[in-house]
Amino acid sequence: MAEKKKLNQTGKASRHKVNHNTTNAQPHAKKKDGSCAYAKKCGGCDYQGISYEQQLEMKQKNLKKLLSAFGKVEPIVGMKDPYHYRHKVHATFDCTKKGQIVSGTYKEGTHEVVDIVSCQIEDEQADAIIQDIKGLLRSFKIKTYDEDTGYGLLRHVLIRKGYHTGQVMVVLVLGSPILPSKNNFVKAIRQKHPEISTVVINVNNKKTSMVLGDRNITVYGKGFIEDELCGCTFRISPSSFYQVNPQQTEYLYEKAIACAGLNGKEKVIDAYCGTGTIGLIAAKHAGKVIGVELNKDAIRDAITNAKRNDIHNITFFNEDAGEFMVRMADKGEKADVVIMDPPRSGSDEAFLSSVVKLSPKKVVYVSCNPETLARDLKYLTKHKYKVMEMTPFDLFPMTKHVETVAYLLRLK
Image (tube, rainbow, N blue to C red; front, side, top):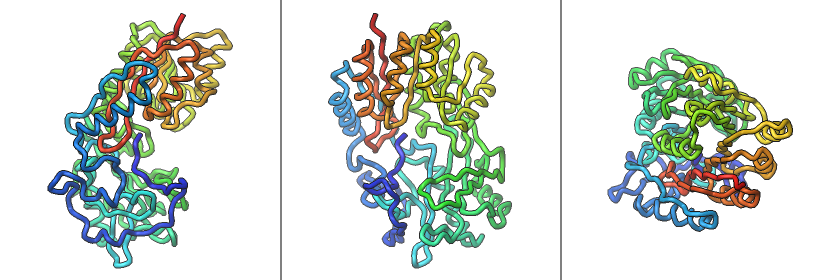
């Protein structure tokens, strides 16, 4: 997933500063020429002042350069409307020396907060909620958190919105579990935005660059929202992984399932299964699905999602997927299809070797990084697999990131 840049070149958090030039921040994301008003300060987008058609051409060219050695790269699937696609919106809160409350993203390579009123790629409703929260802070005497001193309360606001359901979650990330007049605060923000389905306090009292802490306190609603994807309903909690661009994700996952060519009899392994999104969608077309994921919280959500969708032919395991597949192979067990959706760093050789050892007939690789995809395809094609199809999808317009579905067939 493409997230906005928060760290400096060394990968470490910079000393916290507020951008004092943001007091006259433009109220809209676009200038008259269509470019972003915050482009020079923010750095969250890689492509500004470039038409969307040119962006797609640049991505296609880069993909061909990296992947053409393995076969034809199909034309990239772009968006009809490449704006305001992010349904997960995060804003950092701070205060200038002059006492002005600011909210937005970090300037590229720093922890300097750029005050952003509306963003070209973020959901407009989410941005409006963040601005109204900012407007309520003074009347409720809520101070923003200062990373240097550890003083203050509100660190971040995270908004998650269901694309199909319209449900909205507001997560207030606080340095303490106590929110003054919390019931009145929730009432005030819901008066402005009755579409809000749930409000959660997330407690992060550590000096860390991580946005969310480990503890969630539901103060309104159920503490989660739901959304629909490819005919399945998924529960989204504050820390759940769920693609930020659900419109394009449907096309991405539909292609992955199509590549698997399921007829209702296959045994499928969903490696790096997360909260079970791809596996649950595949289960409707397969004989049996096994989801494997190391994150125990994600597995808990995956089990809940299976029950919510009344899907019984899927089993989840809280284990390392590579080790799990090696044990399967050692026991003489087989799988017809392995679907893998690794992080941006791709898969390591230990995992890829476990795929080769299990030797499924088909491998469907869902990649969010073409560079690591090229590296991993090189390994698999050296071990009796042939790339049959590669289709890229633009899930992150205005940024350099791209998702690709690669379908590989085992040679006899």
